[in-house]
Image (cartoon, rainbow, N blue to C red):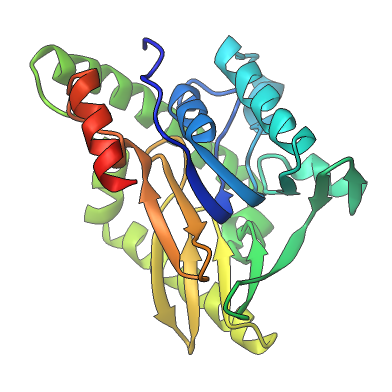
Length: 272
């Protein structure tokens, strides 16, 4: 992919991203770099599965763009952004270090975010509420292998679609939405996380893990999932008034339609 056209800065109070999976072929590192270059915030939450240690232990894969993402995150921290690194199941090795702070980067298992409007949110990756990950890790690894194979098919499919002039389409997301077991799994996960947040006295929960961006009221609290940077390229953002919003970065930047740089610039300016 050629370097994306520059765009005006988007300023947010807080940003949440997760499930980047650096170290895998499915990682959309260049789209994420575009997002990081175009956005600024006071607090940046990395909500787990940032580096996919599971995959790297089995087969080494590391593009220059993956280095660039790490360098960009560290540069934001040096310039004053408070970066909160929350561990997930694919980078669970971080949990061995406990809670540490390095400069403006804090490593945590979970965090508490207080919004501009006073609402309190539990911020957690969410694998702790996934029975397969907790009790049948071998099955989770088999599922991960199948998911990686599906992403490889998805990449091939979208190369063919681009040549034919069709926009980006996620086969993985389509199958997720069409499969009853997957829909049930997502629903159960959402209810478990929202129930935990309510039990602990929070106004909401912000998580990742299942690669399914969503924001809805459940169990009397606000459930927010920031999605991923493998299939959907989404982030959760907080505006200065405390309002939360899910950004579909590819949709916002016109990256799924093959539009020209001038059209893309006009779109970004209209949305700024």
